[in-house]
View 1 (cartoon, rainbow, N blue to C red):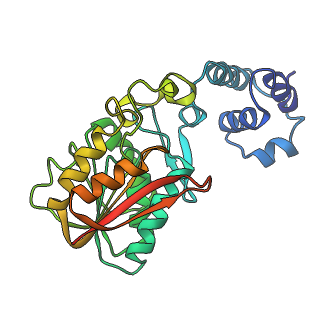
View 2 (spheres, rainbow, N blue to C red):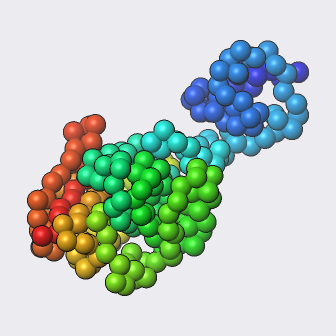
Length: 272
C-alpha cells in the first residue's frame, strides 16, 4: 500500500516538494491542505501511475502549468496548453497600468495584441465591465484557449484571428496593450527551463528580439483614437530601445515602469 505521504516522499528525489504536492493534488482533484490532512490515505494503482507519469514528465522539463493545464493570473485561474505562453506574474504589471489608465467604470475601447491564453484581455474585461475589449492572436489554437477561458470566467470580449493589426482595418482604440515576443533569437534561455516547451512564436522575435515590437509600435498610431495610449511589456535590457521606438512613432508622454525587481519592463506613450 502506498500512501499520500509515501508517494510524495518518493517524488522528492526528483522534484521540489511544492511541485510534487501540486501534481498529486491534480491527480486526486484535491488541494494541498487535503494532502496534508490525509497523508495516510492509500492511493489506487491508477492514481499512482498517473502521478508517476506527471513526475517523470516534470523531471524531464515539462512546465507544471502545462501538466496541470492551468496557471493563476491576477487572482484567477486560466487554462493553458502548449499552444500558449504560460502567464507570468511580471505581466500583472501591464494589467495594473492599464487599470490605472482606464478606470473601472470606463467604456474604453481596449485591444490586446497576441492574447495567447487571454489572461490580459479577459482580466481587463472582468475588471472594467463596461469596456469594449478586443483580443487578437495569429494562432487559432491560442484563440481556442482564450475562448475557453473567457467562457469559463464569464468575460465578454471580441476574439479575432489576426497577425497584429492585419484584420483591424479602420478600428481605433483608446488603449492598446501587448505582451509580444521579445527574446532575441539566439538567446540561450530559449533552450533552457520552461521556455523549451513554450511556443517559439510567442517568445522570440528577430536577432535582437525587437522585430514584433517595431512592427506593433509603427502600426499602432493608425489604430489609436486621439489621446489613445499604447503600452507594451518588453525585455529587461530593451527599455531605451523601446522608448526610442515609441518616440519615433510620434507618441508623447512616454512613461516606463519597473517590476518588483526594479527593472524597467513596461513602456508606453500617448497619441498626440
